Length: 91
Image (cartoon, rainbow, N blue to C red):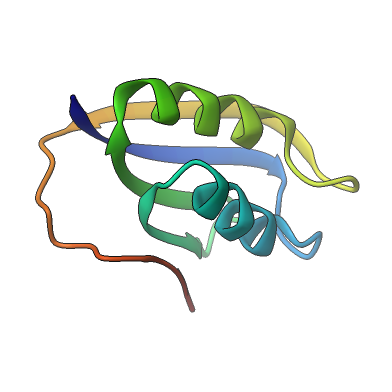
């Protein structure tokens, strides 16, 4: 079943390769959408994919890359839009 989520990740998640880590994790779990830095230091991820793959993707987001410290992940349930064909990094 297709699901969509928005994740807001807070902690030490900018300047540590978190967006590139997220892009690789999305490819591994066949997730489409995007990741971007927010001005307040958080990272936003909008993701669509199969339910089980989304759960596995979220677990990776909670871990993050080596030098990150994920303090919190806010999860918002969205309706799948089908608007994404890949996973990209937005500036």
